[in-house]
Amino acid sequence: MLITDKIGYSNLNPYPSVTNNNLMTRKLKDKLANLDFRHSSVEEIEKIFSKEILGHTRPTINISPDGLFRARIITNTKEDDLQTTKSIWYPNFSEIDQKYHQLNRCSDIGQNFFYSSNYLEAVIKELNPKNGDLIIIGIFHKKFPETKIRSQYAGIEALKTNPKENSELKGYKYISENDKIIEEYVSSKFQDKVAEGEEYKYKPSIAFSNILLKNECIDCLIYPSVASDLKSVNYGIKANFVDKFLYCQSTYIYTIKKSGNEFELIPNKYGKRIVFDKKDAKNSIIEWKENKASEKQQTIKYCL
Image 1 (cartoon, one colour):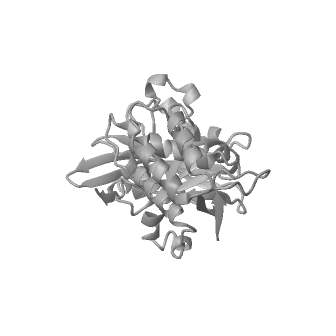
Image 2 (cartoon, helix red, strand yellow; image 1 turned 90 degrees about the vertical axis):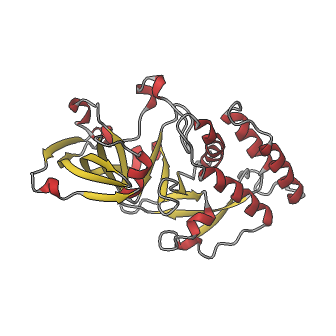
Image 3 (cartoon, helix red, strand yellow; image 1 turned 180 degrees about the vertical axis):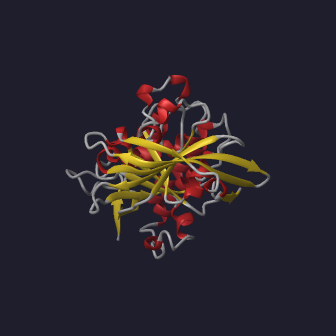
């Protein structure tokens, strides 16, 4: 069931005054239009958003997903580094050389964040591996059946077009024209196609993600997958929520064959058994088993 939350409201002051919405929207549009995202910091953009959209209302939902996919390229990764589910967990940037830190759709440089989808095809397309790459895939589930993840949407109109996945949004109506205009802008930034070297274009979506996720009750952002032409859904989840409430149930390694407009996933190995670590799920041990020759013929194909 959808709930509506207002941005910038607090328990101490739940109804701050928001006057002249049309003026507020014009001011926001003007400020954003004049921003140089390449040279502006995420903090600067976030500050503008926070001030200008105070009182903006967005739909919130409690979800209980199972079978969230993650994928990672492991072409040059040592086997010793693939022995636990940490190998497919979100990257812990405190343990990673800074030269590999970068901006992403919802996360700033060095910010731990869990990107996933309920479709394998979506994570493969988001990863965009090269021909001959090795990839590891992990499927994540809830530790406790009753676990709910309170989530916000980003890209409402695009998500509405897939009512099978987002039926709750089908009849959603904006409380004000101002809310709709702000959402249109937010959606456009979550749907930008960002080329290598242009990661600065992620800054507006990162800034808005930071605002939404500052609410301690919100643990997930639901937004359309750009790599899947907005047909699939991505789930971006706070790292601490993943550590507390999720675990990796299954793991697979595939070789990528990429030709023309097609990805082909050739089975290589699979986790025959995962020995769960109750103290820290990311340290669960994977017992790998190589696929038989007959199994390697059972490939998965996706069109680009």
